[in-house]
Length: 328
Image (tube, rainbow, N blue to C red; front, side, top):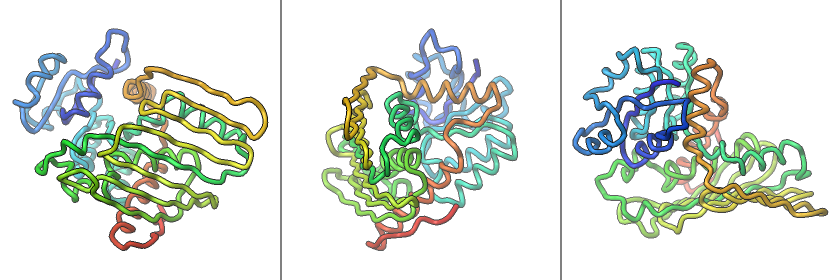
């Protein structure tokens, strides 16, 4: 069991704490919290048994705290990671790790120098449905990979206020990318490998405060194509589908419950996994890596490449043209 501190207690930070606040979780325990405003977090801290502290340094100087979990605005991530690694703390940071390759590389190198675990919260990698899809891709059961299509939607953009940090284009460029799209990019990198080129468009369909919808066409280094659709103002849904010369497969449902594999010949395979706790599983994996001093399962070179893809998407939105993904 490791003791951890949560930094940032908005709706997502609270989700992270709640995901492991169960009697049978013996891997990680949140003991301490820090937020910008104590009043907004007071009731939650009382309910969750968290000790609120007034500044980040109090966490970094506490020898009982082995790891910090960052659920803070995107532009704060890198400086907070640098401070934590300098203090010898292991770090779990919500996605995206950074908004530029240069900053992401700085954070990764700092963790490597300090010899601490650095994990980024792409929780969907841990779902059994994604494990099944990954297994089929790696086993070559699709034949030649032709294309991958992914879509994810949510409704939180409808209630986003103009003064919320998530509404600021400096924090959340390219529409729904930082909220949702980076998850889909990460899943595609996991399945198909490195991305060569992107062409992106954004729109404001229903939000009063920010661009809410993003479409991206992609080309992979292996020659396959891809498409991403994400929105923060559309009825919640998730789907990722892989097409090959010998099979088709998809994961369906906002909670990724259903995996379906359809070979060109032979029986269709369907596997349902209900109620799987992705947040708990990723935090338990993080704690296990801290205890064993092993790298987190999501490779940091893939994380860095994902930030390069994100940068290319932002450039494409601005230029209105396809943009190459920078080498990392």
